[in-house]
Length: 375
Image (cartoon, rainbow, N blue to C red; front, side, top):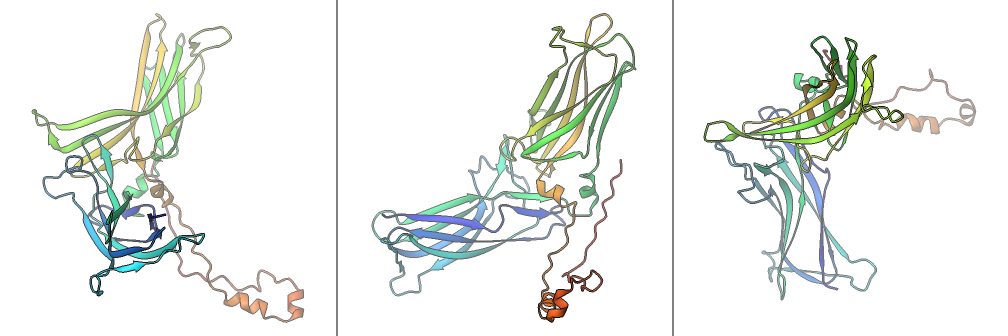
């Protein structure tokens, strides 16, 4: 069977830039390309490129700099050979097809724009492999793989410490009802669940509670594109919401007397980045803001419904940005002390070693991190 199967296998599923564009250092992207052949093939040239994908209309344009990225690396070139090609053999009668593998390395600049996909345009990156052959039929084979570029705060900076700040949202309505939302942090990772403790506390008697809701919204502002009034174009949408009705299923009442404090934990599903939600960001071209809104319907003494609402900004960040707040010890790699134990006499091996007699572990480096959160 005649086929060419190309597998692009990067060592990491994304490119992580740490810090602002002015302070982030370059990152190295490594990996390998694997070819599987079902038939012998005459190969002339193989290249791999790290580039932006999509048409120019879809890409997010800038007035100061182009968003086009094109970095190409030659994996194989047979132009110096007598026939300008080489023959890749295939074991078509064996159980497995022939495999050919090539490593690649790209240096990603620290000032590169992070990936984003909005209604105003997108910035997307991909790894694309092209293999040129000679002969009859198809002479060019290509395969691509989407690879997102994330930007997270540099560890230890004020921006990174703010990601772990607790969320405390509180307000009262005319001294009658107090609304409160509590969360461990103001940040939440994509493709997860946002859980928050909601508290409705009565300050006066004679009120009734009908429902409580939690909503997460996203506002995208395109700074470089303005309307006829000179205002930046913006787009607002609801990412996730949940409405909990407060009532008694036994009596059939649609509301309950607000005679005591009501507390409940509500959760909102956060979709995967670049599909249902974007990361919170503020760049010269685009800004993305996320807002958490608590709503409650309270019926007054005159049976008039009042729709209460409080909100606060939250941050949607990659999971790696939250994991960076914890420091793990480096792996233990020295085996010299283990050899000493194995080389001991039988009398020493019969006696279990004590903690004081064992040598301390050897680490490549020592590091300590202190995170301070100000309420």
